[in-house]
Length: 97
Image (tube, rainbow, N blue to C red):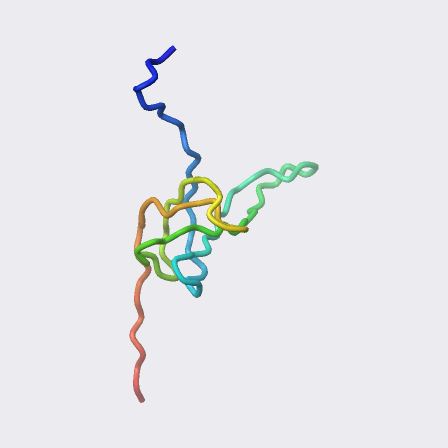
């Protein structure tokens, strides 16, 4: 057994996905896509799930690829924290005609 003053290192689950919304204050919505075989037909299909994540500093924008890690429940829907922005989205400037 570890000594009582030694901190336990827990393995936190991580997911990588694309930011689909930043409308809420300090919250982002991340869409995580995974590829799984169809149960009956074995064809590879894409399944998507949305996760609400806490973004304290407002670093992420729509279209960014981010890594999120699990945390304690922060609200009714938020159970994830933004760990890092893996890749920034390309910002397209508006063109005046």
